[in-house]
Image (cartoon, rainbow, N blue to C red):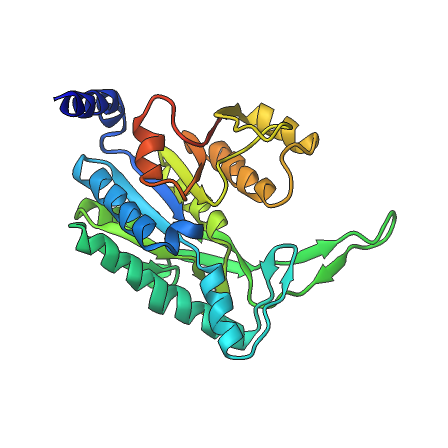
Length: 293
């Protein structure tokens, strides 16, 4: 009986959040361990299906860097990164598209559908969902010198998101699952960072939430303790103070940009925790870092 009462209390705790987020869009960037461990994959699919059944509109954008690296290694092709971006020549781009669109995207769609959802897989090429342009990296050479331009191949940045494609699917109760591959003005294909795509999709949809799943617990302070909540101003200060550093900087910047472009709240959470998405959305404490305006 005590267990039953505890379950009832959990449902009651979730009720205000279910009411608040009903008919709202939540964009989830799916990656890391949550895409690799079988139990976490199943639990993620269940979380997404539950969101849809209680009247929330989830949109999933997935990564796949480790899986791309594995296929390239089997081909005898070494992965090269510059400033965290995979150098992507024509052969590598073919592998990126094959793994992200042909393999991982369909696996995620199947997982969600097996749990009772109605998922549809997309890449940025479908309906010109993600129009992209070539990403140009520059590196400073010092004072009064022209920055060096670094060519990393077919790596892109989002130029425009066509929200109509996603909105049409949502109206028919489908769950969009998006691979971060964009298309250029001349039809060329671009490999785009999944976090950046998730942020831009959330902005275009004016989403209630953007949730980034990672392999760390969230943003931590100088003592490596989790920071449950941050304002944009506080987050920028921590970057300046180098408390937020390394790979966490682009994730936090992604959240800050999304907030500036109309997303209500953003979250960086640990995807290694079972049912991480539900715990962050429907509990009073949450499990990661929430960043707001």
